[in-house]
Length: 251
Image 1 (cartoon, rainbow, N blue to C red):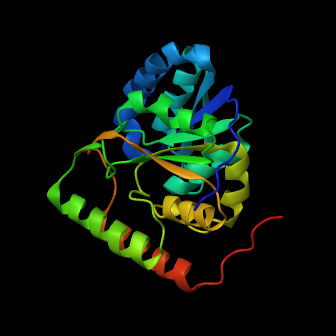
Image 2 (cartoon, rainbow, N blue to C red; image 1 turned 30 degrees about the vertical axis):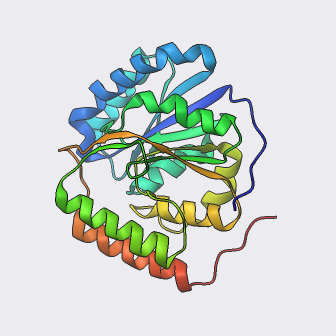
């Protein structure tokens, strides 16, 4: 059983949107939408939106992101030349000075009304709070092919093979205490699509408290996930975690 962590007061939160060339069309309207949604919650804490651009130079996305940062209070832009969703998330999380860090996919596939619930779990003592499309109370709209592949991946590889009792490690909607993130991230080797599973594997193994939160999630037609390439990456990542010598836990 994962031990309970102490309750904490969260006064500041960095919400990271990892973006790359495929997000050009959705970046501006979705950042504006997220900014509007956060307004009622600001009385409970300081929320900042971090647009974290990863990959080679992308002038159009940079221009859009910088314009949003100039016109919307509480929006910041970070960049890393390294391509990969994990690089975008971790680059921003490691620089954060907020009490908690969060990330969500730029397509905003998850209902934003779940965000206060996610952060509430951290306030109540969880170290990691993860959105779940497969736990009781979740609502999911997804193509049958992707649903079957995802369920097989989670049940056979994550739950049975790795022994992690988390029903959804891949949902792009997660929050954690910044202190916990700083301890886990340097040991995560994958910075592409598998980074979430590896992060949660290390966190579970180290005894951090992880809680799942049911979400309402709708598959986006703008998804850039290449199923075959991602499936191979996930399989190789699971095998590596199972048989490789685990990275040392920081003292």
